[in-house]
Length: 260
Image 1 (cartoon, rainbow, N blue to C red):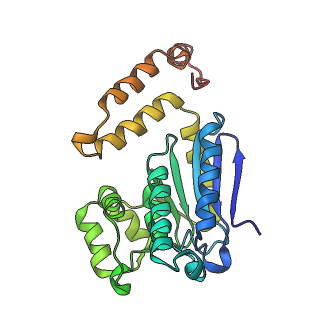
Image 2: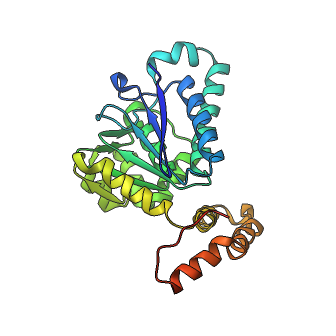
């Protein structure tokens, strides 16, 4: 069975963690497959939004596949390689040029929570549960993971989750701002698809520019690429889509954006 699946439906690319018997725990091989799927989605102009989700209806992602530790973390060198690989994937999703949505149905714990917070938007089912249990396991989390959580829900909420290791429900996650909406399990996939299609119908160059600039806002001022921010904005105004947007507005019709 393929542990990572992908599909494209209209303008939506789906990246699916398919290890349900282990609550979608992720091995190094699965992270490598994730990278390859992201390559495909990034290079395909028809894909305008990426949805990350877990198979089986019980978990989003539960973190690392412990059964693979002997092979993947059996030495200090192997552990260093594994950790670097995970950080690189998280960083790639965090800075992916197209909008990303985490579709959470069930448990979103530890590494799964870290993965979800890399996405731009998080939508969950009413049964979903969230936690960062590191304090109960004597584990340490690196700076980028904690920075993303703080950026997403604020320092006090992030500290609450980290210090207590408490498992919170979907409503609490919504109040904290970790998820943007909560839906009945039966409607989750449809609601996420509707949101993704709404985003996908908008001007791709504008969405790309806004995502990059929003990421730069959260970047250390000394490392911001303001020239690229300006270049992306200029590209919007120089595009055929800008002309299409103006024309469609005047003609009182829905614009048909091409991303150019």
